[in-house]
Length: 204
Ligand SMILES: N[C@@H](CCC(=O)N[C@@H](CS)C(=O)NCC(=O)O)C(=O)O
Image (cartoon, rainbow, N blue to C red; front, side, top):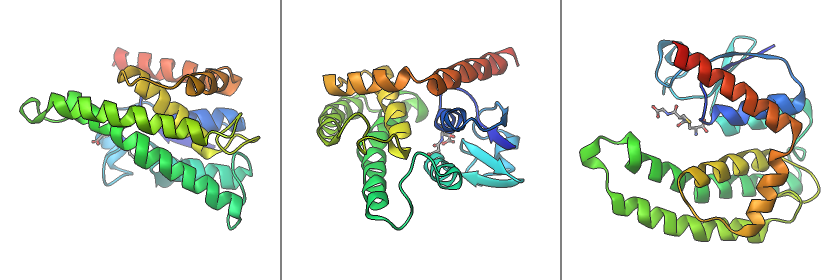
């Protein structure tokens, strides 16, 4: 059984969502970044961590890729051109979208207050609007890689949801794509699991 370490409303959601889609059993330790239980397994103290036979795996994209390869779903085979194209889109989403969203978050509530620059948030929103447009143009449909859902779709929807919270305007085509993914039963189970983790953290 897998063991996920990670609280609600962060990148842990990506891992929970894939495990729900795969129908794999897992247990979860809901916690905040930098808690002792996280630092025990991750030098950086960041979430998520996945324990596989007591071996800790870090980084949500690395974990999704591992799970997809191991279970032979949501990915093209390693060493194929299709996999190289899929990895290219994954990195586009991480470099072009996640990095900008993270920048907004840093200048909204992560950096010490005196280091936050509101203009950085404005410029990042402006850049992100164009980058989301570029992703929409790359969308082959119904999924980023065409007919099959794959690793970058998990990360892209997480970034789209994040963009909604960060008030980044999104192209219409991505709205339809996101809605289609949100209808998936696996996604809805992951949302329910995230709410339960949040309630657990608030009760502590
Ligand atoms: N690239 C890493 C980033 C992990 C990360 O920054 N996680 C956030 C939560 S979403 C965190 O733990 N932040 C706390 C910190 O930076 O101290 C991943 O995808 O897992």
